[in-house]
Image 1 (cartoon, rainbow, N blue to C red):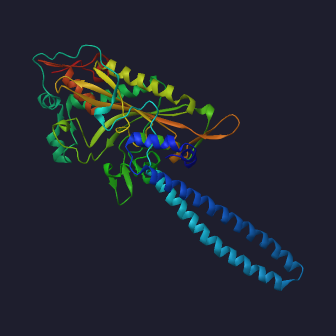
Image 2 (cartoon, rainbow, N blue to C red):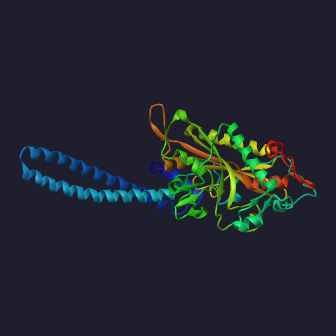
Length: 425
């Protein structure tokens, strides 16, 4: 959530950032924000004055009673009662102004970093790092992963659909072991990189979903347990980042580096077509997430470190990949800068997104009230970052497709100690 003072002091920067995003009704929205904030300040000032008058009169009343001036004291009590009635009206107006202001701010996206390219959608994303090596040559073996999964009894999509519905696969045999192997591989790599592992809840309350920006932006994409007013998590980013909600850290405590494995749940409403077949788009999937809380001066160095971490994972999995810098029209609501990793599927002959690594700057921390104190005790908002390291479905798809041969599927050497097998046949 943007800070009102930031909007007021950087109005043109905010406008240009929202234009880059394709945000609608910019002038009207920002005008409403500033006018509501002006009204809030005026009401607060009037309320403070009334309360000061009331307190002053209350003190005088006690003295008048002591002096035996009962009638004069009673008259002042009437004045105090009137001031309290007026103060209640002002307090109600102030509460309404604060609520209106917050709703405006909650619906304004983050301002893109200066390096975010112009563009309306995914076709305008910039290739930040291209793959410059040979792509896998599958020769006579070129089955898509859903056929490989059936051939080697790794994933039963039909049984998953029977149990729950489409988009909820059932992993079996070596398919299940491959899932577990990848999770452990990703978690161990995160630990080696200095991330502390946590196992968070898989459902969150509304405050947590608002804190990281899923609400109100992605309300329709989350599974909502209405009777308890809880939400199934779309990513571990939500519960892990909310560990720091309403927390004040010391700058010496930074950075905070956490990793967590969770299943993730997404409704993916409106997703249809051949591109969503098999593991390409699911309602439930596994993912290891890395989350960081950083000093503002160091967050972009941290972002580069996170990119290197994800690159290292993909190199060890022997998968061709590229990195995209998302354009203004494709970047997420909460992000200031996002890099997407895509792996190449030689069987499908297309790129598959497997990770997003983002810096949110102060956007989430302002919602979360996540601050740090410097050495002089002054409080400031921290920066938050997160990245997929990694999401499993398309990694599994790419592993099966790119490492297939006519007599089986080779497992990358980095996974052997986790899978306890070197080949699926």
